Length: 479
Image (cartoon, rainbow, N blue to C red):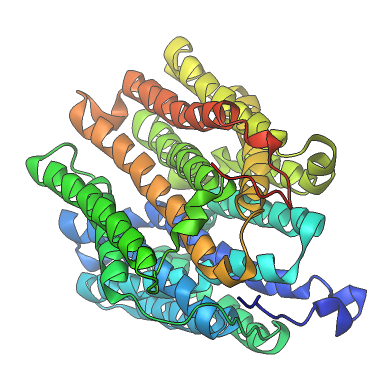
């Protein structure tokens, strides 16, 4: 078995350029996350500008997430076999072209098609990010890039509504088009720099193909995500889709086990699940992302639908969240060296406390008194928790992963992020659809806040129950 060979950047360039590859990787990562949250505030303008119906508006949101998830595992395997740099650059190019298409779309059909292509490009670009970080940086050094990545994830997610609100307010009738157009120059820059700055990797892992396994995994993930992405609550169709999705994933596991026993190529090697780090990391990633990403929908609806503020005000509301996530994330390397991955549990606990505090405030404080000042501390605490959670949790997920599996491991963690986001947002959408009063009812908003806090609490309890803090880089513990 051969390990991936990557020329260490510090042998080729000076220390001043040591971290330039990370910057290049995180530009499209930020863009793909901004595209998830900024589009929420743009929907009313899209509805007016393109005369879009309810189905069209829903597809603008959901088709991006679905096609994003569709390509994650293929992107990981392609990177392992042919080089993550190639996959990254191709993904950025596709995402950039799709963003321009969306900005120029003359009708809702073309906008939906552009969003579908953007999801493909985003998935291809995102999967190599964590894979290349694994290959570029070794051992304890990884804590810093993963911490920076966590800061970018948290800040980008929180800044999306504010950016969208600013562009819509300043752009007038074309404001919603600027939400997509802003991706284009940054995408061109990231593609050009990626082609020239990122070191070429030539992994020499196991070669082969597993089209049946790839099809089962992809179909299972899409079928599982779709009921939560439609946003129409609990319906017979959604229940059937969820059952079918889970059944396909179970069949996928059976097929993978049989292929490995027959010594055939498996698209997801089951040896990855004989470790402790990756399976626990996938689970905590799913739960944590379901909690904190869904909170953006809850806060937007609380501020706009229940309290009657505008989109820009809703964007400003989450700025303490963004600030907190950046402050804590940039300090995770030092904190990890001192406390280990116990800081992940601490971060999840802070997310739980912050979001639960929002729910308590909504329940107990009169609507006229719910302002920025009251929300400042809970959202700052939530953001601080996200900064402690995202990067270190991702880093800890890969401590037992071999270089040849960097791509598929990255795909599994990224899939957990996307699925967690879809499930969290889908549950809140179903909640607002089912409960009387919908998002305008403050009691419903409090329940939504407690649901998001519950996801983070479940992830924290999983960390404690599995004694994950005993895992450290270099361990080889298995079940």
